[in-house]
Image (cartoon, rainbow, N blue to C red; front, side, top):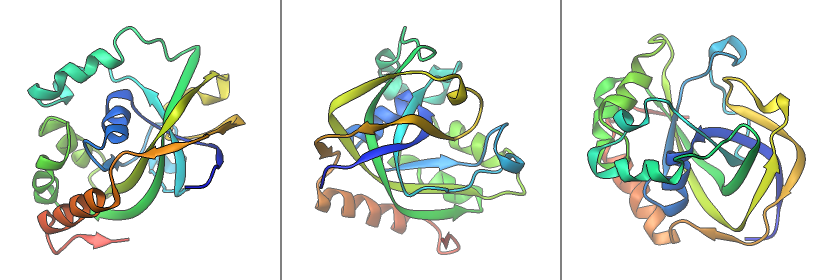
Length: 195
């Protein structure tokens, strides 16, 4: 992959960012935030850094075998500085319109079964977006100061300065990534609408 830089970041739970960077899962689930336009999430970019953050009820959002992952963000203060360590390219977006589709994805993520269902049921008139991403680890993570414009409950952040990504290492090999994508497609109902 050629050297690129980025000013676009997508806010994501630090634990999920870590899992994506290690290839433990290859997707995110999005619906929106309080400060989104119309409170509805839109996929505005197909290449972006992951901007790590926290959920207060963290332990309950993970499967028991994955709760150790909370230690990675334990005691980290994201209010002053942010370290970018994962870069993503959107490969596919799938609209999830039925709860059984969410249940079919359980084997492919670190979260508790209840967490994605809670996201699905929030604002039920809107479908949930399954974003399959190819994640890359920055060989040299970049730490930047937090600007006040980054605050708030919204998904996309335009950084004050471009982040030099340097050398990137894929979280999964091409064949491993393709195999996971194929398994996810097989698990999903045929009623899923591929965007």
